[in-house]
Figure 1 (cartoon, helix red, strand yellow):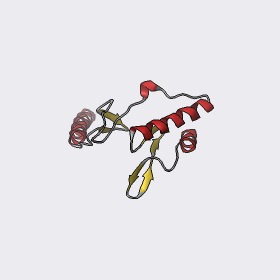
Figure 2 (tube, helix red, strand yellow):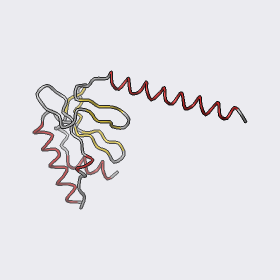
Figure 3 (cartoon, one colour):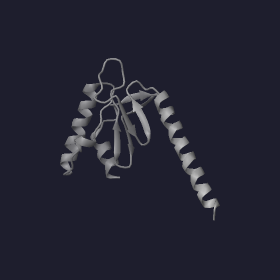
Figure 4 (cartoon, one colour):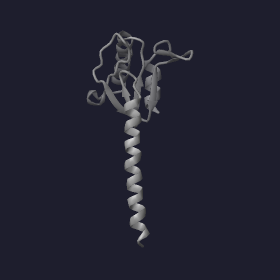
Amino acid sequence: MFNEYLTQEAISEKSGILINGANINNIRYDDDTVILAESEEQLQAMLDRIVDKCKQYGMEINAKKTKNIHIGRDTKAQVSKHSYLGHMITEDIATLKEVQIRIKKAKVLGEQRAATKERWSQY
């Protein structure tokens, strides 16, 4: 709840990226926040405002947990991929690797389920 208040207070509705006619500048889930910006300069300005608001409330951003992925032609990424909420996000927005990861996870779960079912069927 506080995360939502702090983010709304710190980030202007005019900043962010345009998606289907709507301006989106952040995505929040639990205590995680994803900041979206059109440029590195806009992103830095948004982060500076968030840091300032955090300081006002005696909080700070954990730099060790902070990731930065640039998606676009003219930028370089600090990380080329990052797992967020179970989804693999890549700088080139490729989905093949994500699909391969999900298939592998499904196979492992299927094998575990079959083994558990077999074990319990003995009783």
